[in-house]
Structure formats: C-alpha cells, structure tokens
Image (cartoon, rainbow, N blue to C red; front, side, top):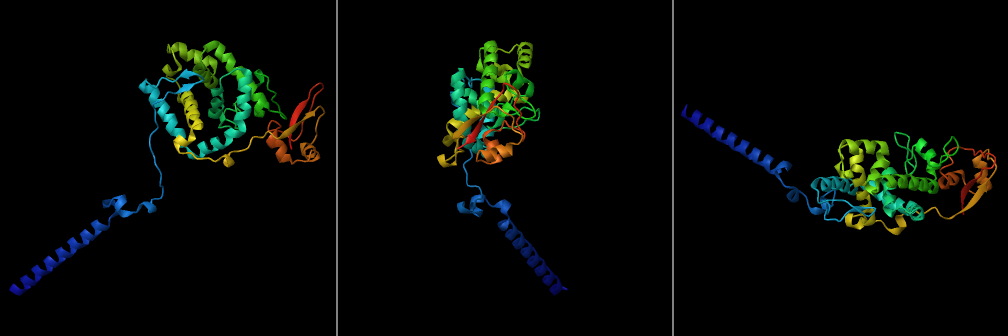
Length: 310
C-alpha cells in the first residue's frame, strides 16, 4: 500500500508538471500575449503608413472670409471634414488628377464673372469635378436641378443638357451665386444657400436667430458643407502636406485642343457626323457631354458650337 501511494503521488506530480509546461508553452506562443514589435519585424507590417491628426492652427478662410476656429465647435467640425477628406485616399487622388482638366476653364470664367476663385472648390464639393447625377436629379459639375438650370439660361431637353456644358454651366453658377451674394453679403452664407436653397436658409436663419452660418443647427449635410469646401481647398492647395504625391504626368490633361464647328442644321445621326469629322462617336461625347442623345435637332434661327478634337 505504501508503494502504491508513493507511485500515485509521483504520478500526480508528473501530471501537474506536464500541465504547467503545456500551459507555459501556450502562453509563450499566444499572439495575444506578444507585442506586434516582438512578433513581427518592420518589413512584415502590411500597412507601413503614418496616421496622424491634422494641423488646425490655421488660418482658414473661404472666399476671403474667416473660418473662426477659435470657436471649439467650429474647429471640431472643420477637423472632421479635413480628416474625412485627407484619409479618403481614392477620392482625393482622383480630385488631384481631375483639377488640371477642370480648373483652368472654371478659374477663367470666375475671373470674368467677378466672383472669388475659392468658389471653384464649391464645384469640387458638389460633384467631385465630374458630370455626376445626384439622387435628387441634380446634374453636372455644378449640380444644377432642371428648374434651376433652366432658370439661369441652360437648355435642358431630351437631346441637349447644358448642365454638362462646363463653360455654360459655370457661367450659370456664377450668376446664381452672385444673386445670393446680393442678399447675404457673405460667401459663407452663399455656400449654404447653394446647398439647401435660399428659402430654407432664410427660414432657419430667422427661426434660430443665427448671426453666422456656423450658428445654424440644422441637417448634417448643410452644417458640414462650408467645412467640406474649406477642407477640400486646404488639401488640394497643398497635397504634399497631407502625404499625396501626384506627378505632373499623372494629372488628367485639359481638353483644350479642339476646334469649334458651328451646327446650324439638324444632325440625324451623331455617329455619322463624328465619322465625317474624322473622330469617333466616343470622342465627340467626351468633348461635348452636353449632347445626351444620338441626334441633334436644330430649330430655326438657332445653332450650336460643337468641339472637335484636333
């Protein structure tokens, strides 16, 4: 019996020792117990990047008017839009590439129409510098709805949609913006009105007794709108500060190598017309996105100027 108990005791000790050893091995090899630096070398890290906050020292402005970041609420809301766009890599890279295609034309017209250059960033916020269509049916770089576009002189029908005509839509946008500026005398209020409409701005401005656009407490889209414009301006003006490196060769070329052909008679087939001009139907549409059908009807005493790439 003595030897039996002794043998049993030794077995218990061995079993306990084996369990301790097994548990120790599990602890040592458990990734949750080992730091990333200890488990992997720097070369093995899958996303070697620096992720940091944005410098909010400023100053920040829009169309010559201050963004009061000394107000903590304003500062935090601007911070959100800067971070959202600075780390929205694909979208921001596309904007950097597209700006060389769209900005020269927009900038020239803004000067001619006498509105601040910063208004071009409103187009960036509206459409991402593309001929986009919103859920509400707004279209083009400046995102005009059909009634507003027609109200400012744009032709919109089943064959022609000048909301996609960069020059004409930009001039219409300038007229629209200047109309609001006569009312508000402040481009920050103008931007809010462009986003949600003047009547809505007037309603909430009066109801909430808001002295500045930053005092409004309304829908999240409009409350972020001015900050989004300022954030996009800040990033696009100095992309290297935010880690973006786009070479000149990567920028999309401006579509400025063309001749203008005046069309005074209806064209029953634009593909035939393109072929006769020595270009493809696709290139005709790229240079003239306002031609939204395969035909072009020209009424009496009317004519169109079509861009033909050369």
